[in-house]
Length: 243
Length: 243
Image (cartoon, rainbow over all chains, first blue to last red; front, side, top):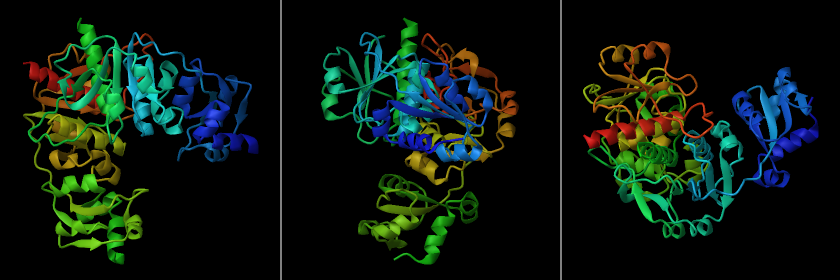
């Protein structure tokens, strides 16, 4: 049985200011909650219509399907909803391969980029302060639990990149990523969905890369930023395995 | 000034059955409408609060911002909405590189895959009949006008693939795409977001590929299907340029 305070807390966590205030976020659905339960994330409370989840924590609340609908953001709630503590990010390891995001707005894009970092073994994801919050419910959802294996820092990326020797960005007129000798360390910057990399950050980029465009018409203006991330990370990792 | 019949028609086109019945679909926003206007797509009617669109067609209707909100699916309508005729797809050129989708459900995924086909010069996209309709408003939106440069056919893909000699699919235990000699022609199959490639289609695949997974934990279950498409198409095109 849900209390009014529990409902109020869960609803409040849909807003970034309350997530920041409480240092908590919500994860939903069997798959995503499972991933966070099997990670270092600290569980605060768990709510489900499936009693087996009572083994996870003493802070288990059995809820009816109707109650679950009340607290869920899904049109069809999937069994379980849990509140976790937002972890403190550890410092960025700048001597590895780091992905930096300059003002990514779309939660789905950020979520799939976190999933890509996890897949390609990128431990450090750095986000500009105006990038969408990684604990936004849609980011958590599309991240599919990969948050648990990627260290995500929100930083003044301009200041951070000033100390980086090798900084890559993608531009329409850059050198083809297929022809470039890609290193095993450095920072790869991805820009905003509509406006690309901002002028201040562009000034800090040493190597301008491009993803070659094929076809006879070549009228496609751009790739979706998460798809661009997929291709770039794949190329960095592929060439590293060839060395 | 909008008529009731115009509003009724536009609203009806949000449903596949009416799009099929009328052979029409809706495109919205400056960028996407611009792409369709500059293609072979036949314009039926155009609605805008910007009078310069009256040059595009005699079927121009000036609408107020309030009226545009009434017909738009956007939370913040972007100047223009247009109805176009759905074109008749031309036959698939099976002697080229063809992408085949087996039951893709998410409109955003289909839209970005169409954009990827456009970027990588894949002329033919084949969709199973249970794949989401490519003229669904969200697909049109995330396709960003790339529909105009990709030939999209909805077919019984099982029957279609039976005639194909070289058929690729991605699986967790396949051969690394980085190690494989990828040809310039053949069919690449991508499966459903949750269930992958169906059993019937899997039986028709000659070459099982995989996208290598990095990182020490290797717990990421899967990549988003559009991201997988991005990496696979990039690899096919990259290796073709090296020959």
